[in-house]
Length: 130
Image (cartoon, rainbow, N blue to C red; front, side, top):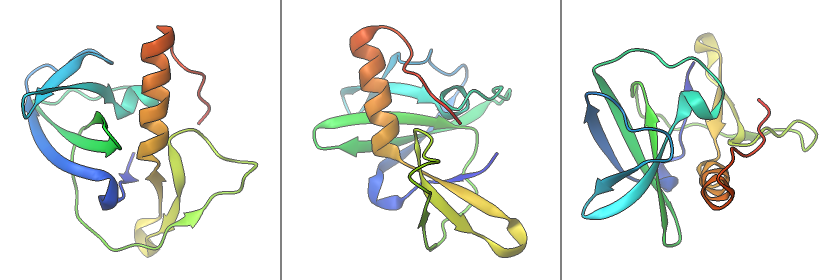
């Protein structure tokens, strides 16, 4: 599955080799402990086996999050169309039409960060629908 990430949310992208950290387990980035979440797990998909993954370091005010993805494909300028208020799954900001490549869902990095922070406070996975 492919998703788009708004670049205004991205602070840094790092390469991760070997076994990924457990969900919610912190990784160290620039001397700072940052919670990590696998995007596949966040949306309830089966993870893929890869030797190399990427960590998208995103931020909201003083909070940081590493969103672990299987691969990075390309950087594009896109127009984000918001989803209906009735159909607003957590972690999704909207969608963008890619012509022959289909439609991409655009991540709501702030929403993902808020869900992960809620999980860390309560110790239980936050409810999601996708």
